Amino acid sequence: MRTILRCIVVVFYCAYFPLTQAAEWQHFTSTAMTTKLDLEFWFEDQKKAKELSLRVFGEFDRIEAVMTRYGDTSELSTINRLAGRQTLPVSSDLFKVLQSSQQVSALSEGAFDMTFASVGYLYDFRQRQVPTNLEMKQKKKAIDYRHVQLNGKTQTVHFTHPNVKIDLGGIAKGYAVDQGIQILKQAGVQFARLSAGGDMRLLGDKKGKPWIVGIKDPRATLKKNNNVVALPLSEVSISTSGDYERFFIDDNGERIHHIISPKTGRSVSGVQSVSVIGPDTMTTDGLSTAIFVLGVKKGLALVNRLEDIDVIIIDAHRQLHFSEGLMSPAHP
Ligand code: AMP
Ligand code: MG
Image (cartoon, rainbow, N blue to C red; front, side):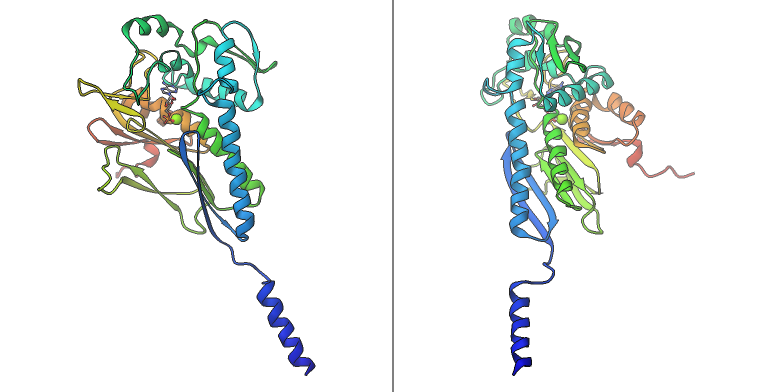
């Protein structure tokens, strides 16, 4: 009788308190920074996984509140209002992103330039609105990343031209993805994929297999298969910049889109999409925008000089270009 009782107790205990809970892939989505967030990671406890996903998504909201150009309550908006007249203190999150922007600007000889916004803010892609020639003339001189003076010791910013406006749309999502991955790592997660629109970071592999990441056809229609390339990747970041994200076709049939040449103040042509692979997402995000502006020749030359960075460019004729690191070694 006692043995039977013991067995019943054991069965009951095992049913309600499993000794090891089976881990599984946990998948969550949300929206922030005007884009879709997608998170997948390997974790045991579903309830804790949900809590963790909310912390990751909360980090995007926190960063967005600091760095958004929309509304006038963000720290970025305050800087845009005042830094042309006075030196301002900057929070450490924002300072890191400003510093990184300036590094990508120097590396790309000004192809990436957060002050593009001095003219860029005059575009409204939904309203099909572009700057007038007069506005362009008045505001273009304010585009130059060297107008943004950062002081690392005092963590302050100052603009040396009164009309400068900055925008971090080309790099802030990458920073947020890196921060999200840090939160997952600190919680003991080993395998994860986190993306915000075109910016993705992979933590580890997909439990023994690489993650398969597709590069979208920049001219995909809803009906057709969307991907032109599928890449097996692990433990890297990949960011794609495309002329299909925010755009309209004007009355002359020209595509007016969100990546702006700091030299001309106009949308860049010559390339349809650029995907950069590298060790962290703030770097790949900044570089994908920079290389889009540089175009095929200068973009490939820059990437081939950089260690740990690779690129896939789809040009205006839909031709694919790969950096040296992605090409198989030449046959003798
Ligand atoms: P991405 O999709 O990462 O290439 O980011 C595109 C966004 O970067 C645009 O929507 C703008 O907010 C911003 N941007 C556009 N042109 C430039 C540029 N030349 N340098 C830096 N940021 C830019
Ligand atoms: Mg970018």
